[in-house]
Every structure is written in structure tokens, then in C-alpha cells.
Amino acid sequence: MSAYVNLAYDYPVLGAFWTILWIFLWVLWVMLLFRVIGDIFRDDQLGGWGKAAWLLFTVFLPFLGVFVYVLARGREMGKREIRHAQAQRRAFDEYVREAAGPGNRSAADELAKLSEIKARGDISDAEFQRAKEKILH
Image 1: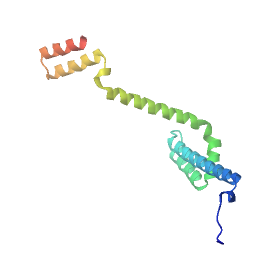
Image 2: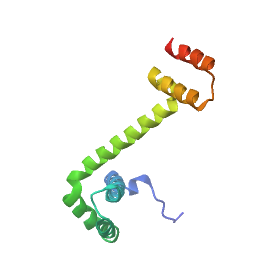
Image 3: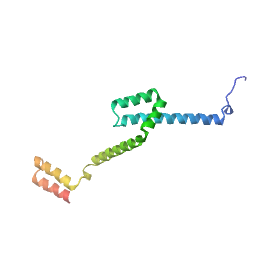
Image 4: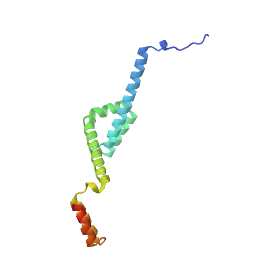
């Protein structure tokens, strides 16, 4: 039995700690890189050539590019993120209002719609009166 066997004590605890730390920092770096690239595309104030230049800078020189981007434009990144989240929230709220259907409409909206249907001649006067009474009561 002359073969060398790797045992747990061949890899010390400090070595495991450093390995975990480097993996954590690498994952953090990748997240920051994608966040910066997303911010480059999301920024409406930055023109096409500016976006292309920042993107090339962060892709070909990622460490330097990301650090320079964060130093130069990092203060506004959070504000852009908040504006984007608020716009998404407004779009979601609007979608929910539309999907909720006529239950959210006011009586005036329902009467206006009913009047349009009557004006087109799709319903008779009697049907209009019955539907109006339903809306108002």
C-alpha cells in the first residue's frame, strides 16, 4: 500500500477558508460586472457611442473598466435602478387594473360605455334602461 492517500488533514482549515473566500469574491465580481453592464444598457442619458465605449471598456478590460465605471457613474446607478423599479411597478399596477376588469370601473364609466353601445344601435331603449338601472343600483 504505497499509494499516497489524500486525507482531510492534508487540506488545512485555513486553506478551505481562503478557497471559500476567493469563490465568494469571484461570484461577487461577476454579479458586479453584470450589474454594470445592465446599467450601461439601462441608462437613457448615455448615447449609443457612449454605451458602446463603456461596454467595450468593461468587456476587454473588465477589472479596470468596472472600477472606472463605478467611480465615474456609480453615484447615479442607484437612482437609475430606483427609477427602473418604479416604472416596472407602475406598469404592473396598470396591468393589474386592466386585468381586474369592469369591477374597478366607476358608474360613470359604465354609463358612458352603455351610451356608446346604445348610440351604435346595438341595444334597444328598453335594454338600455334595464342596464342603466343595474349600474345605478
